Image (cartoon, rainbow over all chains, first blue to last red; front, side, top):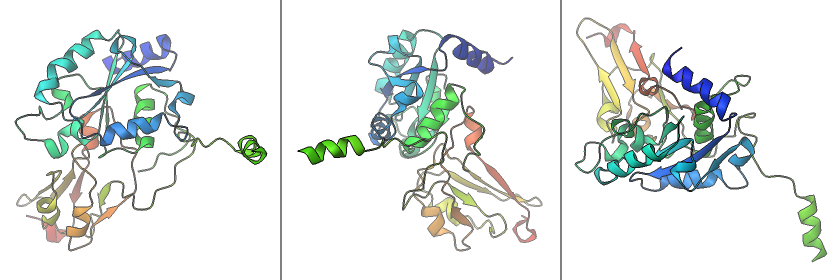
Length: 152
Length: 118
């Protein structure tokens, strides 16, 4: 069993397929952050799926990182990750967090979240639409329903 | 006043049943740019046009050319779709791209047509 599969088994057993999310903005333009805000509105309502945002990394199972991981926030991101209880997951949301996007190859950004934290799930998009983020979060929680063929 | 109360009682939940039912594409939503390898002649117009250098076209002498796009960098702006003189890149509307591996969001296509060799 690979490390990722082991983590999935632990999540299924201990967290009962429900995740508490801490959002970390590591230098985003706020595009992705607005899509995350939309997840909590009555239309997308991710609380119906057992997912919720919490106010502290100490209460979170999953760290949702947006933005290009600027140099000034590298240390803060590391401390946030270390403050989380185990098992913990990291999800990178948006082009900036995955490959730098429009901010790649600049002095002030480290290029990707992957350079600082171990990322478990990547959610591409600029910004990803709320359904794409829900898809990524369910993938992270290991509860994607394979009954419906996914688009693309 | 009583009309408002009736409206509240009659209104149905707004929530989308997303994971169970696929969402409708919004008007103007492009989704991922994908390549039709049969029309592509590897001229590199998309590679030059891409504002974030997400597309790479490789032409190696004696072998089939390859076309690769990094969805981890792509900003889904659609410039490559406009730039392609062959009309080989289309907007697919796909958005469910989340993956566990970085490499999984970098699809690569080999161009088998004879006129794109070397």
